Length: 317
Image (cartoon, rainbow, N blue to C red):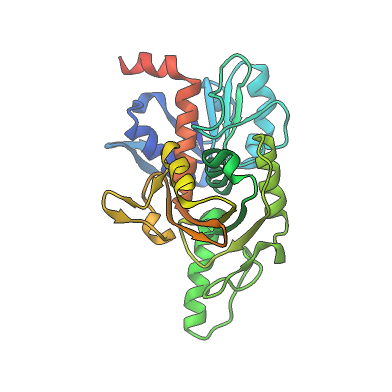
């Protein structure tokens, strides 16, 4: 399998999770932009080298996963489908193409090689909200949601800009904002102010997965990693909601004795964590956190295994 954008934030996470899942190094090729080609990296405990992303080289692999470079993902889709290859898109470049299939592990029907050869991994916000709505079922039909996005949702560029802004503010210097469009350090604001498409994109993702999108607000938060969500469910009691979340294997309350209740604490931790299931005005408030990069990488690796199970099983024997 080919991993495109293997040096990106998401690509690095996917690479590490692939190695941890037992996929041998000789099954995975690591591709990235020309500037990164030849740079040393690691796969598990072994040294590897990034190769330049060249279409001809990608197409020698049965499965191609795009962790960055949406332009390359877009130009590759037709040939992937026409040549009988398998594709996974984490860049959202294929989101509106009817030939592709959006997938959330544990929620969507597992992909089959016969008719779902191109999978789109939804955004972290969609993974988080979709998993929660699926767990709640009918209980969540009247829910309203506020999602807090971290800087890493915009990749390495978002992390660098938040870091630079934070230093500039502390030094009483001018703040540059080519990525966010305004100061984010020590501040927060609804994305509708600048990136009004965020809500529309999330609603389209949910609709494609057959969810009815709830009323939602998306907030750009001044945190580096980790996503949080506040959700209100009317006309239910706490026991119903807690039972629904537990039945869906969400982590409710504490995990291994540690209560994970913030983006900082959830970073590097697998799973969706729900705490503070508390009653209020004939309804229930929920506060949930997830490591946005880990969650998307986990969904990507699960898709790889689902689409290539027989081949990977043969390699592991």
